[in-house]
Length: 385
Image 1 (tube, helix red, strand yellow):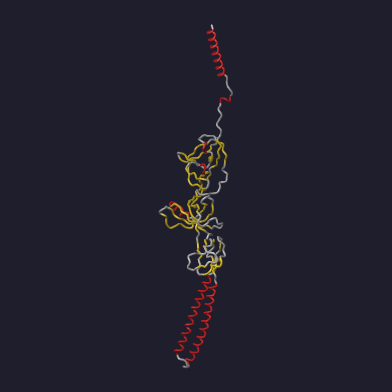
Image 2 (image 1 turned 90 degrees about the vertical axis):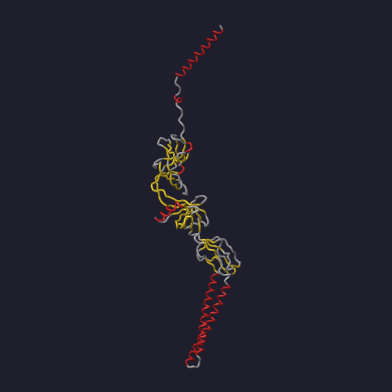
């Protein structure tokens, strides 16, 4: 009896469960439960590709070199009595930079002048005697030999005056050497000798040195493959050269290519070039290492994009372009020269696309993006690449 009752309860439970499942299957659920939520758009920044003229550059490394450097040394011996120019100051051509005690050389000049005056007086006396002897010889009151001897005395005194003039000139030159002037405009070095020291004319130790800094030159090297473009650029007129700080890539100055060296270095396969800069602001300093950029041409109507848009994959370089429906596509490109923050795209883009410049790590073809356009952002300071 008990077994039959338990079996009945089990059958009743199974029937109720089946009926409940059938009812749930036939009853429609809420509409929003049937459709899955679409994935969220990926935030990215974008910029428009452009069609513009792009300069063509050759980049090298160089050092700043002064056109002229002079070591100021004494040409006469004496005591150094003055250094009118402070250390490190700029001087102009003709400025006094050092003075040596002139008194011994002033005394030598006075002595030479006095000796000439004495010899001039002796010459006048000898000439008067010669004239008297000549008059006496005409009346046979003086022998011919006496006249000839007196003529020799006059000629000797004339020669002595010539020696005196040479001695005076030498004394004046030595006196002039006591005041040393700058041979050209430049910057003075640290003192190598201080006031009060005895300087010798034959000494190898200088007093100061002067380095020309305005204008100034930069000597830099380029690979030998860049020789032909540099020569072709010079044939069309002055070639602009821009230099940048070697550590921060800050632009320092712009000048003109002056000349190319006459040989290629076979050890390094490079050629040296020289450029001249006005350097009125003093940003270029002798011995400074700089990066150089030589403009050798202009690429007209080039398609450019920000350099950050270029991505590298197993099949080469590519960019993500934004389609009108807000999704992205992966576009293969080939790139050329880069100037500042923009790079030339030689194939793959027409110049009318919008490219992704940041946030590419979360992208794949067909992904929706939320784009923030930065096309009008400041490109920043140009620098060599």
